[in-house]
Image (tube, rainbow, N blue to C red; front, side, top):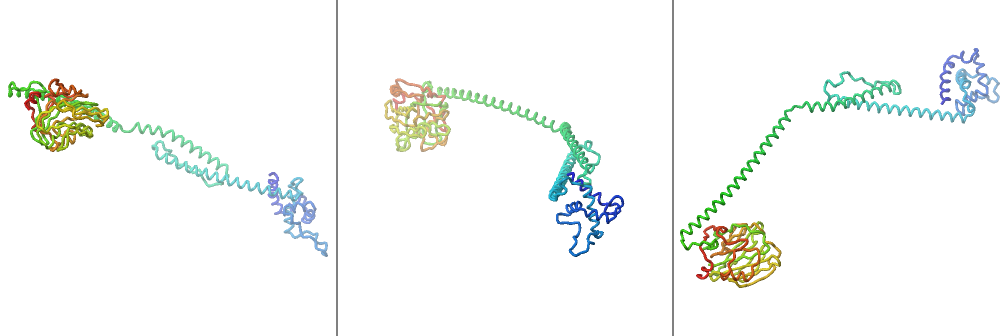
Length: 482
């Protein structure tokens, strides 16, 4: 590197000497002396090193030429030699200067160093351009940030263009750029600190009208909800009171009806609660009786009743049917046309060997248990048939509707006149277990009457509709008369 700087200094110093020959050598030496001095062997080697390996100080003498070839060359070549002569004297390169190979290596080193300097300059130029783009981007962001601030927070002073035209490698320009970037960074930090404060001020200074409106709406909604709840409570109380009043009225009507019956029939009017029957005189789809007591879930049952059919050979119809939500045929006793009487449980069918076609009173009992679906049928105290696998392990569902005289296709309705019962029904009782044959026989011969523990036959629990009538009936006397 020092050799390169020395060569540059020598070239700069030799320019005045080439322009003024009188100053070429000290002491006023003329051109001839300089030429003779240039012909020395040492300067020849230095000149060859500067002009290349193939260069020479001047043309050699030809054979046969006079000795005048040793005179100085024309002024042009003398100027060239004169320019190089001080280089050899003023810039010695050390021990390796006389070696042409070492000088070429030094020249290559100088060239690579110059190339490195040029690359460094290009990198600095690219870095400065990137810094300028960054500054422009930050300036744009700063402008957008200032545009969203209040006027009092904006900087009133004009922005100075920090990217003035100038040399890229100017230290002053670099310092100016650094100052500008630092100033922009400080302003951005200040704006970032002021933005949350401004947001808080904006939220605090927002009009209070929407908040007040929302609070009033919430208050009104709460009052409305409280009013609705109060109305619902009043409605429930009124409904409960109305239901109680209706039950009391119905109870009084039942008592009045019983009293009227006693007055009409005198001593013949029935006084026991079970001394009545339901009469359905004709086949239709609107005469029936409804039991007003809900059944619980049953895993076994026994139902007994007194029946007298007046339908002849056209089928006995449906003495009773029990339906629940989702199953209209939970329990059905049915005789349709010439077919034998059938017991349906959950739409499963078992045929019963019973006959009611003689128009006489008959005592019928049917028992069933969910275990293995065992069933048995009694007529007039005698076991007429039994079986199994009738809706096995299926419990009888609760909260259904029990209808006497009609078959239900839906819960409590859709009666079919062809399946209606015609005749009389009395002493319909229901137990939640299977009765013994002795108990069944005692009820059939009037020696051991029993009341159902789930559904007893009571006047207040049975309501007649559509023309079906309640009439006085003493089961044992009535059977004897029949």
